[in-house]
Image (cartoon, rainbow, N blue to C red; front, side, top):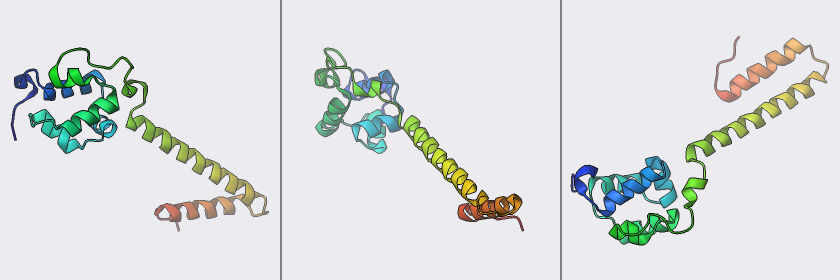
Length: 145
């Protein structure tokens, strides 16, 4: 493996891959997810290893990058269409949104359960104690004795 850093690699495909990632403001994980390359492969690219035609094809097709620019350093960075990476949210944003949706569904389920239980003519403290005990049991927390 070649242990060159970005500043000493010169104008290479490796340098342009890093420039592209920075231009799109993508984390390593987002870049790898969108281009379908592994983080280990990206690390090797950053270290100066050869960039294979397969990797080049993945980057070009996933990010609408100009092959001419990526391979030879000539022309413009992107093809005439804007790259899809700019228009989409990061993986982290999507994960947070999914978690928020799931928590909202759980809140709705708990409220529905409480409403149903309150119609069964049990004393309210007994219902709440039982629900809390059940929720603690379901989540692995120890219920108060």
